[in-house]
Amino acid sequence: MIKTLNVNVPGNNYNIVIEKGLLKNLGSEIRKVYDKTKIAVITDSNLYGIYGNNLYELLSRENFNSQIIVIKPGEVSKSLNTLEYVYSKLASFNITRSDLIVAFGGGVVGDLAGFAASTYLRGINFIQVPTSLLSQIDSSVGGKTAINLKEGKNLAGTFYHPLKVLTDPDILISLPEKYMMDGLGEAIKYACIKDESLFSMLMSLNTKKKMFNNIERLIYKCCSIKKDLVETDEKDKGQRMLLNFGHTIGHAIEKCTDFRVSHGRAVSAGMLYIVKNSEKLKITEPGTYEKIKNLLDFFNINYNFSDLNINDIKKYIVLDKKNLSGEINLILLRKIGNAFIKKIPICEIDEYISI
Image (cartoon, rainbow, N blue to C red):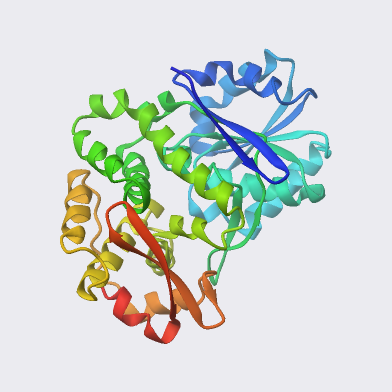
């Protein structure tokens, strides 16, 4: 059953379309918002091996002239080097401002393609076709694009919204389980910050069959929360910061491990550690830590990083883009479904981040 959400921010109004089997209508869905012919598709080599020929065929049905730009899978591609490679491919394909970029992939592809779209020729329209649970419920929505620098994650980026987001949950069926776990970590984040009923729903999805029977509903609920926060605070200066719950520590864990640890797993750990410490500080309702820990265990999400050096984690937190003039906005919970922003001096960060 098709589900549609409309995101409306100043200067941008676009739909998130969620439907099982939507991929087979990719060309016609793009045609609804794009009347030219040239398309540059950005994807990774794993997805190209599965969907490459199919993408050409689906787009040719609507007489699109398409080229596919293939990048390496994984966080390594969110880099200046890969960005330059993408720019060169766009130039060789003679992409102009009136043409279109399609991001076909997970969070890395979406972030990189969105950043390229926002900067090449000072801005080209693009469409998101997210292929991982994490990107379907989170990173494809809201207009944040980014690449990593050697100093930290997502330090160079733009706010640039897509023309449309086309989400086909059936793509997830072929995903390795570790990528589903990544997305479920982000889904738990949404439940923690805004929706206790979503937390209960996640606890009920104890088989793969139940998960996929409810996957459209899960994606819709998460995207609805993000849509509301983005419309209230597009540029991440107020309530949208709630979406950073678990990310301050999570991004530092990713960087400390040279991105060998996936984003969803790192954020899951970040949520758990921050709640463990905020409970000790009597900020968070007692028992919240155990609830989150039990849900992570329920989905077999590994959150143990006790071998990491706390000083290394602190070093990357200091470089985090949420660090503003020696203060950092931490996202804390009062209880499940009730998050708030607390500004603290960096010199007091230790009591919140012990692992």
